[in-house]
Image (cartoon, rainbow, N blue to C red; front, side, top):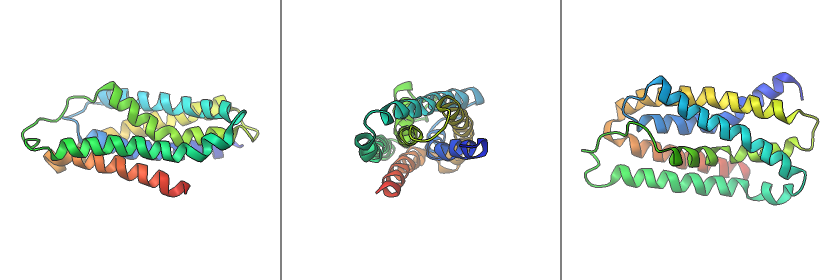
Length: 185
């Protein structure tokens, strides 16, 4: 696989994480660059790890994981998105201030949900001539960059949405999960 194709693959793998980051950023109260970078590094690390796991699985049991990866991503993102929508629509949510930062557990679960496709890509990369370490590194770096930008962009969108930003973030996660499922069925 040539370097341009690897770079395009890396940015393609980061698009769903970018969309989720916009939703996450919209629900935060004035996230700073450091907060966005922290979230970007969490997403990027997980997104870099999953193709490595997929590559290892591809050497052993590719058909099983590949057949279920989109369902796993869909249900993870659906559950997280539904929780965010519920919290945003809960009575009294208008008076609740936006979070200063998201819990590391929620960020990690969202990152895992958006990186399941990278797991499937890793399985596919096991069958072609590619340096998996370079591919995983590029995917992680692209995701870190895209998520950091997405959180900062979400901050702008969040100020336009006001107290309904949590609902927007939840709908974004449900949409990303549905998109992953639809493109893999």
